[in-house]
Length: 462
Picture 1 (cartoon, rainbow, N blue to C red):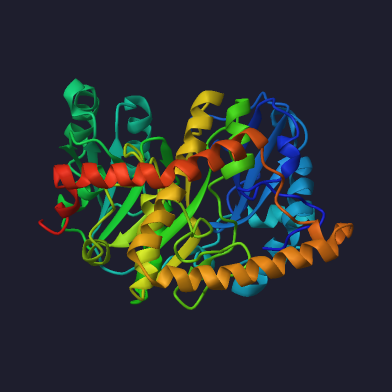
Picture 2: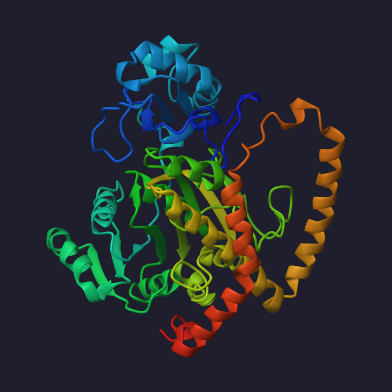
């Protein structure tokens, strides 16, 4: 994807201009091969009243850009949208058409009209098909309305061959089961599993045990999956060395200040480019302590594993993840182990889903604090369990020193920092640092709980 060097981006690769105010910003998507009319991410209607908007622009399922429209989208004409889209994504549109030969070569906003009719057979919009079984595992703890939206989006996938395993991590109330009974009566692909032992890792491990599918995909109950999400998420597994895949996650809505601050600090999207990571990728700028710290790869609410790979690695560490003392980062350790075992991880942005961020400030701060706890816990585990971590740390220290020297030499040169991610809110930075400091003790507490309950043998003893 081409990037305007003057366009600053958030940590989630969204235009920073939409975050220079705290008022709501509309979220939408435009598929150029279908229409220039935006639609909402979750299909629940489109009637924006916000002062501005962010539109994901796609062509034949390929994300090209997120365009900031600096006025209310409700009154925008097709010509106005075409001009904004062409300004932000014109070069990407041309590159897509030139690469695949799937439409007449566009030369300006008016030529976007020729892309409206669906084009069949575009290689860029056709994921490879291969025979395999897939289970999507959702862990939930009492968000019934969000869970239903998530399940409905999974049942509407273009790839119809799947099973959906919902692991209820708060089964005592019976509310999740009651909410799911009508869905299960409608569609036999959905199953309910009760797991009373608290913890996201525990629930995900239970889901792995409950299925024999060759591939296990994971998402959360506060996510809505795009119709092509699953087929693109599993497509890279057609290559034998791929052990894990991750997809792109964009905000379902940006209605509150807290939701906007989350995108400024810890947006889930990793960009529009397909990327691959393995042991040879090594630590570089932006990936220090790789592969143990691997936030650039993907996130846990949009990922898939070969089941044999995650079982061989012992599943997700119950001392990590939401609901544990450490709070998060169970996928961080799982990604590192997949790479260290010789596997490859592919980030495929066409595997798109939309996440409903926390709406209030206290919940957001707790979430970021949890991210810090998890990072501190992962570093503690690597430091105490894997001698290879010291090699990664030594290499990362060299890179960090070089980066610091370059920063001092280039200070005052605006071109050097023109495309840096936006600065992050100080309060959230402090919350994360506090979490990192407390992470080692929290991890030790999680390990004690894991041993006491025998949770570390859950996968090995299946």
